[in-house]
Image (cartoon, rainbow, N blue to C red; front, side, top):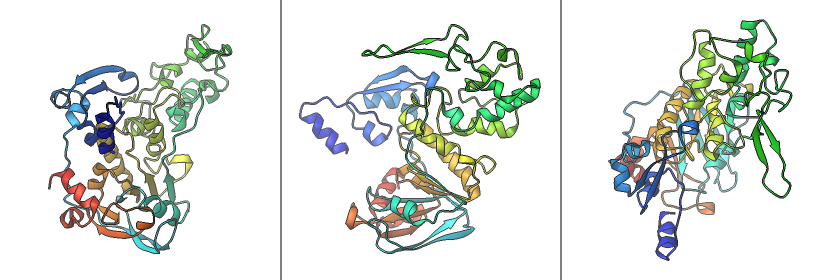
Length: 380
C-alpha cells in the first residue's frame, strides 16, 4: 500500500491520507497532526511539517511514533482448550487447531489468508462466546456511545433513588424530555433542497430535559451534566465501582462518550462494542461471555489508544478471551499466536496454519512473513 501511495505521488498527484500507522506516517512529505485529544479535547492543529519535526514535537503522535514494545517475558498458563476440527469455511483446508483458553490469543496472517473464516466460521456459537466484528454501531441523532454501552442506565437509577422519583424522568427519550425539542436538545429544520439546519432549543437551552427534572441533584450534579459525560475517570462517593467501571472502559479504547452516534468517527464507533464487553458483571448485549472474539479491534486507533486497548485486553483475558488481529502491537502482546502461510499468499493459496506458539518463538524462527515483520517491529 505504501508503494502504491508513493507511485501515485510520483505521477504528479497530491495524495491526502488519514492514517495512524507509523509505517505510513514515515513516508509522508508533510504531516498535519490534529488533537491534542479526542472529541471535545480535539479539533486543533498541533503540528504541521516534516516527519522528523513531528518526532521532535511534544504531540501525542510525535511521542509514540518511534515506540517499539518488547516481547512479553512471561506467559499465562492456559486453563483449557477450544478444539476446532476439520475447518473448511471459504479457503480453509481442513484445519485442525486447539485454541488455548484463559490467555490472549492472536490469529494473524496476510489479508485473505483465512483468519476471519477460522474464528467466525469455525468456532461453535454458544452463550459463552461473544463475537464482536468490525461493523460500526448503529444509532440515531438521539443516541450516543453512552447510551449504546448502557452507561446512563445506572446513572438514571441513582438519580431516581436519591430523589425518590421514577428513573424515566431522567431519560431524555422518555418522561423527562423537553416537550419542545422532544429531548433532542436541538430543533432540526428541513430546508428542502438545501442542507438542514439544527438550532439549539430555546426552551431547554440544549439540556434536553424538563426544567423540573434539572432541579433534582446527585452529588451536586444535574442529570443533564451527567448525560454529557466526556470519558471522566473521576467519580463521586455516591457512584459505585461498577458504574465507574462503565465510564473508564470505553475511555480505555480512546472513545469519547458524548456526541451523536451518527457523528462519531468510524474508528470510535467500532470500538464501543469492544469496550462494552469489559468485565463479567457488564457484558455486551446483556450476556456473560467466557470467550470474546474481537475482529481487528485496533483498526483506526491512534498509537496512544492502542496502548490503552492492550491494557483492556489484559483485563478481559481474566475471563478467558480469544483475540484476533494482525497488526504489530497486539501481535507482540499476545501470549499465543497462530499464523497463516509463510509468504504473502491469500485466497486459494492460504487457509493453512504455518505456526503455533508464543510471539518470541515466532520472531526467533522467522519462518513466516509475520515473524519477519514482527522481528523488525520489536527490533530483534
